[in-house]
Image (cartoon, rainbow, N blue to C red; front, side, top):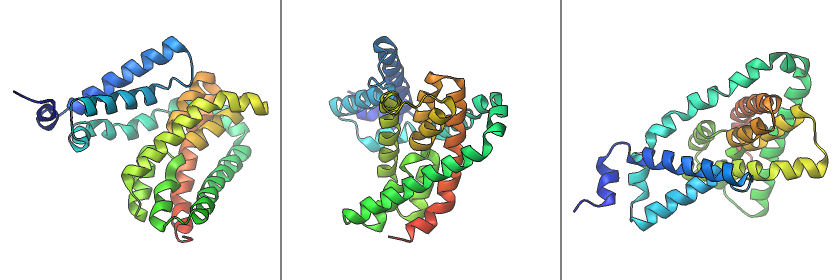
Length: 233
């Protein structure tokens, strides 16, 4: 009798199919509940974990058969430039403020993680693992691998940061009275990368465009500054 483990080992795209189905279910639940806490990514993750545990499928077998999805991460990220192109005049008008705010957000991210790692006695490997939590997955994985971090844990940190931004953004904006679309988009893209940008798009096209811009700029700035900050711990 063929086991589910055998299917994932020998079927090239079994993991990819499982991931897509789980995300479709997560998206359906999110639309039904209309609640940011019902995040489709988190729902998909829980469904995949439950499936792998129930059918006793090794993570490595699942990962190998879902690698094709990782391949599409970069072009999917590039597609986020479309809303930015449609709001190009807004970028030109606010260029200085945008650059300064994204730079400030990047510095705060790097410094705060450094201070927390020092406070809790973490090592250099831990620091460079957590450091790219606020950039999109392909960039974060590259930074972590290049600087000697644990890439798998980096992906987990990126997912957590993105989903926290997705769930908390609305409440945070309401508490602090942040209503400016440019500020909302920049905050989400800078702090919560691609998942945050998806949430920004739910607020509006301007927020989505600024989120995509912040996502790209924060990634570039983090790549440039990461080696310098990595040498501090």
